[in-house]
Length: 132
Image 1 (spheres, rainbow, N blue to C red):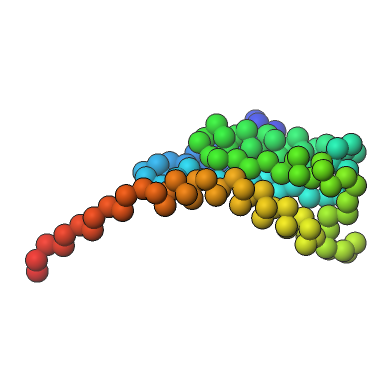
Image 2: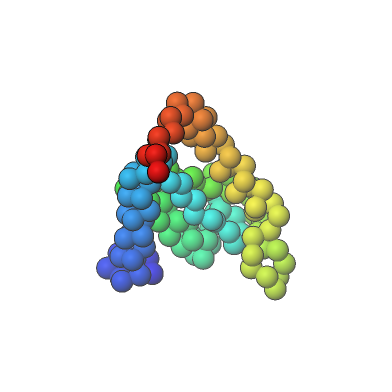
């Protein structure tokens, strides 16, 4: 999937380009991309599995940024947590409650200024409808 020559990666890049274009055409704020880090271990001293996850998330973020997305990195927040088991439980790989808290905190911090900027824009006057 993460091989830039693969069909899957090219499809991913095309999807990013399409989303960004739709936002521009509609005069919307730039779309937001958040690669959702997870996994057990220490992101400050990653094992091979975590190192791959981090590398893939950076690669995806770089692609999104090239297409005009605002990107949110979770890496520093995860590094500050030290060693953690970030799964719901040993049988369920979904992100833990703390993992979801980090997602929410980092996303909120990154998009709050964008939302304030959008809210400050003048509201366009409604178009007049032609008489029937």
